Image 1: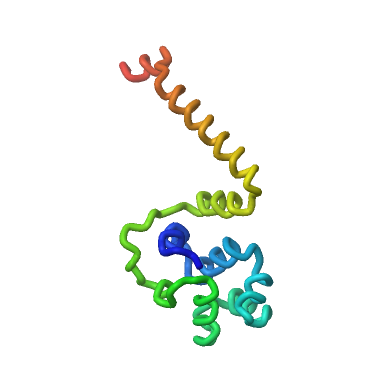
Image 2: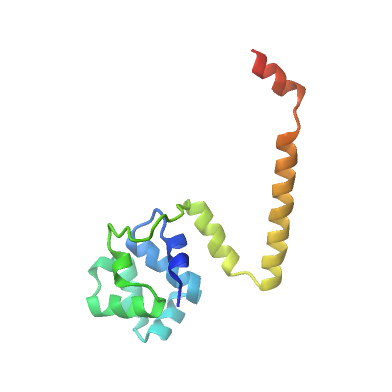
Length: 138
């Protein structure tokens, strides 16, 4: 089951259907795998996600929430009982989704690379170039 903190991280600027699809792909890699785990016909889930989760049968949505390990209330449009959630851009969410699909070794390599890039950026920000000084005096 997904923890509340993981659900908070994933509830970003997206509609309910996109949110559920992101949860499914994050945990099950595909809608078909999720359908098998939830014991819901694949066609039911696929058409429901295409048309919008708000039009799906309540029983189906409850079963989906139980399989995803989330509360039904978290799908409510104005549900704000998350404390102070981090707001992620769609690009950040795409990066997180891709990261979760990597092997453990690839994740480690990526984290090392990001650490390197962060240090490089910090180093470059601390260097004052003559052009920077001239632009500040104008």
